[in-house]
Figure: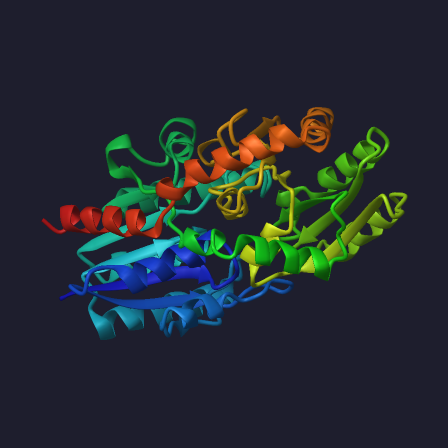
Length: 386
């Protein structure tokens, strides 16, 4: 039996939680996994229901938090070292930045044979000042040297880690894409669409446009609101926009949205987090993303699984998730005018939306299936333990 201690920053809604959940649940029986993670930040919704649905019972470590805090970080580090001494894992596999730093440091000091870290995005662009970013890069370089393997979730991310920021040698970085149970996004589609459209009083003439993600500066929802304001003045179509998620920017964004003239032809809704995203997505017509940086954006994978065309900024791993001009449109970071142009192309062209909708499902159905994720990780673990 191979013992794994799997450590995640926090159990909030997003790709990392799904990643650790499917790996913990579906890896071969030759593995025994202990799953550890912190709590969501203020304004975030926890994702423990995802784990519970899979029969998983994680260990919650309250001191393990996303933002730096010396006292909590020391407590979390000591708790992780204690867990390693008690369970003697053969592999410590950490996910995301804070868990990666504290978990790997604890594993190094406890002399764990195999240490693996998965980057779910990175904090080297758009998060911190240049000085703090340089400090984080130096820390990550040192940790990478002590790691047995580094996992990148896209080709673009591997290029960032090996070529741009030079965190690690190419040989040590393996690409293993995220995996999801996408079948639920294909079941009872007409029924789910009707349910969502009735809930939000969307008639057949109304185009529903959504953006899903934390209400945080890195997600750049201000850009989305600017886009909506311009779109409103350039189309006669009825548009209802849905901002799905929560976070510290909620009140600021609601204030900005209130300054955009709204009527029966243009409405903006803040829905907070939605657990049944498959049903919600089926009621939408277009999915957007305006981020300044991304790892592998789950909202865009789920949207394409539902058959939604995409308009997104081309940042981070987005290019791996969306095929430009085939499953959606990609535009430059902060390029409001191009975003407006591409969104209007979908708004005014029903046939183009339908074509890209069909392309999206074909593209994601095999590439991001959780079985592929599990098989690839199993192969990596076997290779590292030889």
